[in-house]
Image (cartoon, rainbow, N blue to C red; front, side):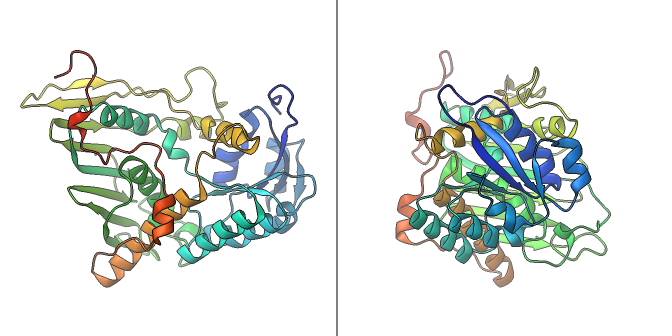
Length: 379
């Protein structure tokens, strides 16, 4: 455990689930965050937990961990369909809650949890860690500086190359499975943080691999008055396509390659260590008719900022890094996409006026960027 900030007792954490998300992301990030103590782990893999977390109390029941008396914060990294019932259990037990993406499988579940957290006076947050990808931070900086002018067309993609269907719950015909539920939340949350809520959602979901039981390809377009944001994910793209292609009235920005933090976590690197989150592939800013773009260096990616901001929010020294309302808005777009794909018609995100009014983005570029000056020397 890293020491807590001066004068504070550590926040005691229970981690529910020690599969890929719990083992690769949450456990190392919690351990590396000052003031958090990973006290309890619920898992059906006791040997793996004891090897990695010998000081943690191991329990076999997620329900037991969610209500454990020695825990302040419950982190849920279990299969998607279990997110809502486990979060409800933890909130009713008086715990603060972090849910891995997707927040919930349905919008109704998200609304119920948001209301319960408000009623119980507990913090409810969702682990939308891709806000702290180096490439996304670079895109935010480029758009914020007005280097692209009015952004009119965005292509954001998150691909894998896994031609064989694997025997795991994410690829079985279960609630919350499929590539849209797996990778779509990352794409949607980033888009909403940049551009706010869309007017309508157009979507295509498909199965391209032999034996696929759920969608393994998706193309979802968020429709704004003068902007289209195309979100794409596939299990059959071997590489070569840009992660981001962003176009505006002053130029375009292209970015190849993925943020390095997941790869570093898989390799057992300690979060925050030397070289952590460094992106070796700069973006390329293209303006006018020039074919020779200007490289843009990406800020260092830093997933630790999620848990450090959460700690500050729980101590009363800051805001939650991802609010329940922001997470609910993501679910509304996710659900609108499914309905659009099923009906063949564009669908609006099904949000109430109150939910829309309470939605806030970290960074809003909905105002035309002509009034935003670029850096010195940029025309």
